[in-house]
Image (tube, rainbow, N blue to C red; front, side, top):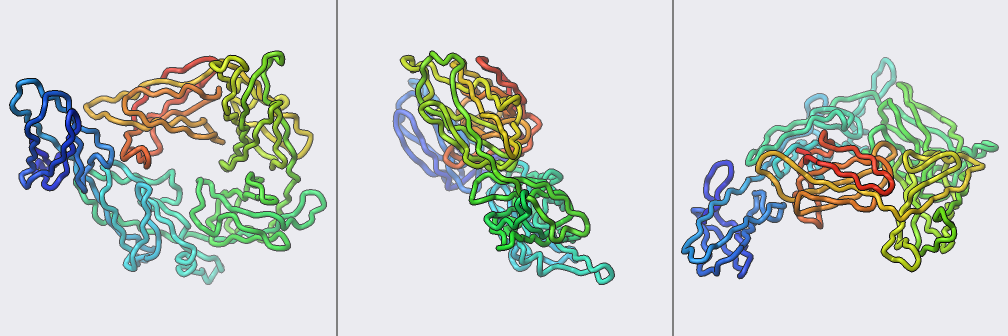
Length: 485
């Protein structure tokens, strides 16, 4: 038996071979790539390979199946192992000077550039990667340039993406081939106009200063690239301030009284920024609701967790009481997706009949197909009707060519605001999500890289192969997926 490099066809020395079947044995390849297991009983075996620098069993490579026939003296096997890739480069400033102390993120791993701006990523699974640069506030402050004629300040944005985009959606992925080291993947940052945003929180009624609150700034693209944007306490007069901002669209998230759900205020910053902007904050109303069956004579048991998910993806849950009632003590006005997470909801006396959310009413609004809007006062009760008719999605992952293996299949609520995301790791090409609330979903598949405990995917998170499906009461939708490349 011989182990070769899949690109160069050269023998692979020092790889660990794990034989499993009627007996379990280990071996290490010799300089000529050879390995041998002697005196084996006939039957089915599997060969797993472990070798650093290659796409091996520790990174999701499936074991090779081998069948020894009765009476066979020798079974010859030639195995090809795909080498991993790598990339290195530098982060440079507008004047071509190296920028040290900035972060570079590839495939979920983050490195800080050296004094000469260099970075390197080893052992990358062949595929396409987004390269993101985060510029800390201190580095941005030290590289500010002031225009003497206008007084405006120019500097680097909090985040940029290869080859020089400010928006992650405009980034160009870097393709890393097998067995190849990409050199000089350099990112040259460009200065842009930076402004300030300061203001004061006030009560909507009476315009008194609101000091029992925290604020957080969010950009048009999800994430908080600058740590100073993160949630922090306002001053005693309700004041706050954010600096080194690029003009554009932002959202100010206001967390009142320590609540997890924020009140969201859209902010548009022009070339002059915004100074001492007064931001009125309304009272947060109480929301009451109930979980029930349409026929009150039918008895049921268990409980449910009702979750409100805001546009910022922040969420808060309330558990139903034995009579099905629940309450949210304080909810910021805004749009929310509502989800019911059943906790052993079943018909009394017939545990086989699980119960699911069938209808969701909030006055004249229906919450299973689109978000509901909570206002400052006079909100109706949130009514969730149960049904024993399950709904879900099942299907198969298919692709042309010889590649196969394990997949990650993700189902997510479609459209903003997104609901919760589920993930399913499967060893075959079939998958099933048997219990989904009715609604619109997006389903995506990727090749699995690594173990289940630490899921990595091969392919871009933005995929043209994503399938949209509408799940209806009492039906199971069938879909065919192709994995992202």
